[in-house]
Image (spheres, rainbow, N blue to C red):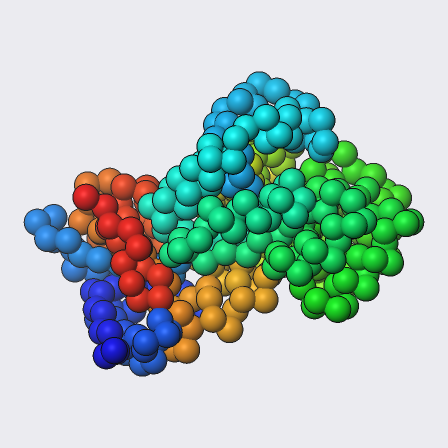
Length: 389
């Protein structure tokens, strides 16, 4: 099987997402970029309203999502967070128990199609329902072209080893799941299987004792939400080398507040973004970036030192996301030796019209104006997995 060659007029290349032109990719049989060439840009971009002008953007990584509840869209509308998602008696968990496997699988498969149409080429799913839930998700994703990690959730001590074995790690609903009786089992399983443990934390209540215990035990790799975190919590994220994933739109949906963006920006924590529960939120990371930006503008109170750039927003769904889940050797950017995962947008579309598009304002245009409708194709491992009609 011969290597594949692809071209794009423009693209965001490398770990700094630098804008380049005349992008040429040689992709080997495994789907990795064997050779990459491009030219620097020394003038404004040449855009024609009569011809598609493609911009290549690295595939987005959704750092936190639950696709298992996609069959129940908007059934959490105007309900409280704990009422909907708190296990085991939250409304979502009742629906999961009552719904047939076929319907749940169909919902998961449609979630994948939606993500591909939004330029998402990798997602990290936090799967409920124990061992059975992980097995069901694997069935749903059989032969799916998208990249993913499954973080399972054990129902009791008897499932701990099985979850670590079957899944790519564990996704705890709260650190309350770690008890005096199961803690050593979890620690031993993590050592034996060497997999990720992520944990929802301080989403709507800040429990100081629980947060202290989590940091003192020091086996959680990724913290999700931290909506109610204070400065010392964020300092512990840095001190203990933890990753932080934010889901601001879902926090807003449930009215639980906003992440402490001022302190996060001051401390330069490389956060990534997720869209969380599909029953209450769509998979659009463009919308997530825009929501994050608008919150930051309000909370930062015009402090120029805390203004976030559009390039930094894009890094939250590419570079940062890959690093937060130890994927950066193969994913997160359009770079030599990484997988050829990216999508193309048409810069000639009417909503992207700009009279003087250049190296500086292209990033603002991408984050603030791009819609899924602007995506013409999504590629994974150099193969087209989505094409807009």
